Length: 206
Picture 1 (cartoon, rainbow, N blue to C red):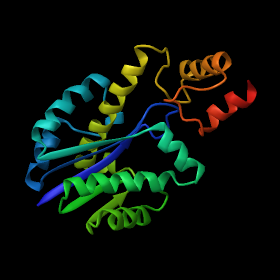
Picture 2: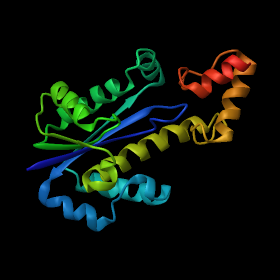
Picture 3: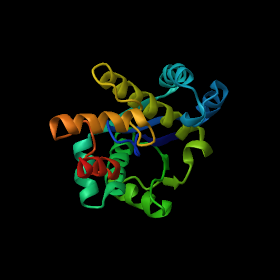
């Protein structure tokens, strides 16, 4: 019995990719994940996430990571279809891993509808979609760690040449970076999500 967990990282960020990760393993191996101390990535320090990432990949029978570019995100936001974009990529992950049952963390207010959409797109009928699945199911917690570490590494690469903070709108360093860049170039870098409200505020103001 192959069980799969799917989660995202970076949905609310102003910049960088939105990462969707999936991991699949035999149901009997779930206990191993729990004994490692796997839990929702938001409750772990960056160091713990990095350590667990390596251990999870060793235990997993298979895993798959998809990165969605700011350009694709902007195109979907313009069509008011960000949830649809996530469903499409989560379905891609499920199709690649082809498990018996998948647990997904729903970004839609209606988890059932979100699960049905993934089921239709992936042609895999056993999709269990829940809010806060990353803190309810250890398999989704594991996927959340894979997604978060992948995204953190992508941001770290950008940080080598830009002082951009965490990438989130609550981070003053990030807001300052986008503001300064826009004032100087009258555009934003390709890794910034142009349709995000805080970014639009910066461009309108300046």
